[in-house]
Amino acid sequence: MKNYNAVTVTSLSLLIVFLVFNFVDSFATIPLNNSFVLEGTGYAATKDVIKNSEINLSLYTHGQSGSSIISTIETGFVTLGDENFLITELKATMLREGKYIRINGVVQGDNEATVSFFGRQIEESQNGSIYGFTGRVISDETYKIIYTAKLEGVVKFKISEVNPNQKLQINITKGSSTQGIGLTTGSVDSLYFRHFSQDKISVEPGTTITIKNNDVVAHSILSGIQNADRHELIVADGKISTGKILPGQSADITLSDAGFYRLYDPDYPWMKIVAYVYPDIGGNVILGQSRN
Image (cartoon, rainbow, N blue to C red; front, side):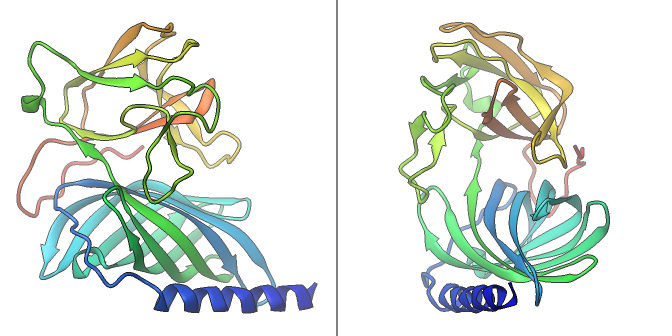
């Protein structure tokens, strides 16, 4: 077992070297007062143990100092094997306009842990950027981590840009009830399927959205909070519930309060929408935040 771990740690070290020295020497433009999702998978290792690890973080950019952009991490989680840590207090700094990302702070599982990650951009497209992250998670032990993660912006809608005689509409795509089937994005991740016409959005409080079902089976959309149980990652919070939406039918939802929403179909849990609901602001202002 120890020989196997030694070989695996050596392989991880070589992968870290590859990620550090093979990145695209270009700048990403990260706008202020915008929302992003950072999702990644990788490994966490001590001298004797290697565990699978994931990150899923929701960020909001709100300040700038020189070429460094400051962001608040609203919600999300970090996993170490079967152990789940929810966000307690994390901040992210995007250096050189997004070419590098530094993440530091505290997460909470059965025990409190501190995290310190540093990422370099290794690929960029119109739909998102890929980063190679290294760093540490310190809980009962110190784990060295390595992730490949995607930073993706959310689509921002303004009420003033929506025709007053129309509602903002998001379509459930045909075939979404089958996992892995849906609208392919053609983005950096060629295996990614979109089950809604927009699955990451940013709107102002009070926005009403029409959910139209273009699939061949009924769907229902609920809002929920992130759960530490990996078998049930989202639990309904009672804020949004459409009831059954039959094929060809529609239902309206109103995102009344500022904050972060996770919308999902409980019967088809791979179908999810991330919604940031904040007023349009300027300057270096941190919004009043509701934490889920």
